[in-house]
Length: 134
Image 1: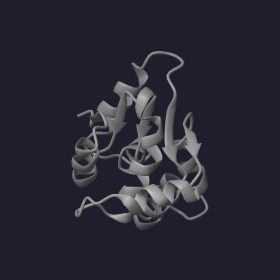
Image 2 (image 1 turned 120 degrees about the vertical axis):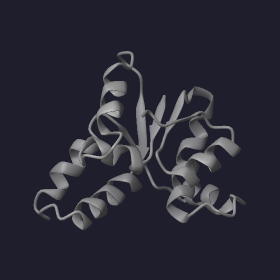
Image 3 (image 1 turned 180 degrees about the vertical axis):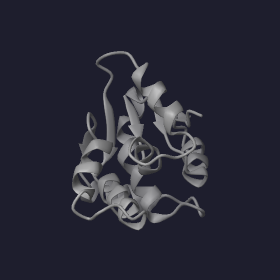
Image 4 (image 1 turned 30 degrees about the vertical axis):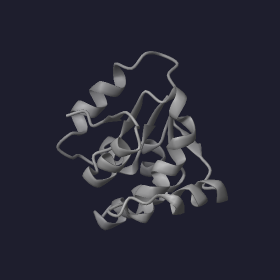
């Protein structure tokens, strides 16, 4: 299983420095590998697109393209409880939710894909296999 945070997913729909490399890396994944993210990612991507000037009527479609093929994990009370429990000082709220969403999948998680340096550091500290294709 591969977990993507919003900083990675937005690169599929908004041209950024690592977009092409990330797309290429994803195309080379073995067939049938499970891809997941928090349903929070859709909100983060929507807000990013709006801030970037994308027409508000296109935002739902473009956001859907960013998360296409991924399992959206519910933002449950259990996820929020795990997020609250992290003692990593530099970890922001949204990043904590991504970690708390991915953590139950740790045994089958092969990659935690993020381009957020603070989230990558926290995920590494928690023993998650961080990857940032570039």
